[in-house]
Image (cartoon, rainbow, N blue to C red; front, side, top):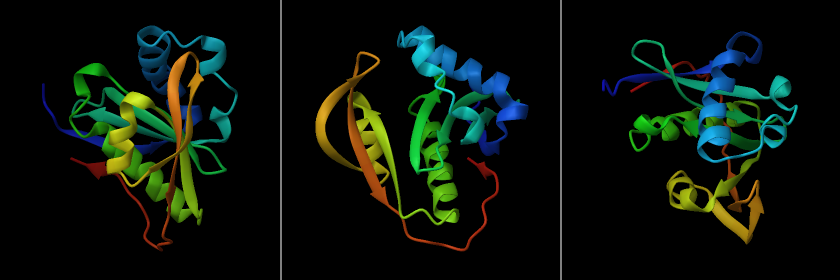
Amino acid sequence: MNRKFTVRRASWDRDQRALRELRETVFVREQSVPCVLEWDGLDARSLHVIAEDASGVPIGTGRLLPDGRIGRMAVLQPWRGKGVGSAVLAELIRAATERGLPEVTLHAQTHALAFYARMGFEAEGAQFLDAGIPHRHMRRALRPTGQASGNVET
């Protein structure tokens, strides 16, 4: 597998099919999240990020809600552990910073707590179940910047 990939901001209107397919694969099929929970009606007003391999095939995604909550982080199994999730998350954090948000939050699956901690997030509160999967609330403060973002290539 070629490990080269790019990350870009996506348009829900233009990229909806690819974003839905990624999330269906990871959440609905792999993790048995019910479709009614996965498709919560918040996508059209969220900022989306998509990772694509060197051939332009979608391999990962995540979204940022207007209130600063990051979610729907999904990376296809063959690409996990190769920096895709970190690159997607970094772009979502960059977008939140550009919007002037003071912080970002997320609900992390407990198996991914160390991943988010490496990206500067701190766990808060007790563990809870979301779609039958153990989660923890996490938060990261942001520092404002005036830098614009482009595509990320690794």
